[in-house]
Length: 159
Image (cartoon, rainbow, N blue to C red; front, side):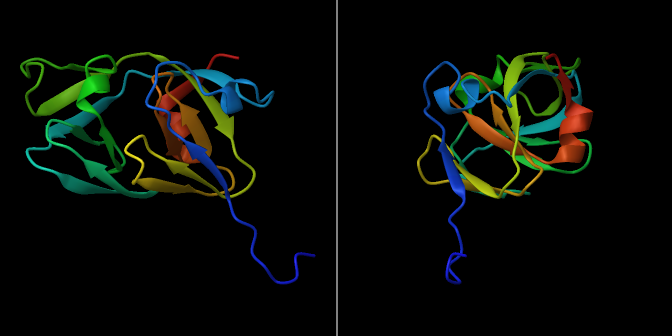
């Protein structure tokens, strides 16, 4: 018993540095997965703004990509990481709004059995995950949360 106190969820922090997080890479429950080449709609933030995602409110800076997936879900990808993860679909040119295809990059994924939180590399934006959600380590210093149904449609487990 915890005397009526609610346990604080585990908190994972994006480092903003290349490489996988030790806490995820060393967890024996993690799996390697690859992003599937899905089409997403992309627009680029002109000014600082916020993006309402299923997991929380995320700050976007000018030039950051704001993506909309096939199920209507929204998320932000920093301008610095966007080009290595998505390519435009003709006639769209790189940097223009429109349809982009996800590149098949490798991630580490950990299926969580308890609620958890992720602090993004801006140090302010905080995502909230539920039991059953996937904690994703993109290998570039950024972390994310993906719901089970979206994970099944978006990622291929390699190991």
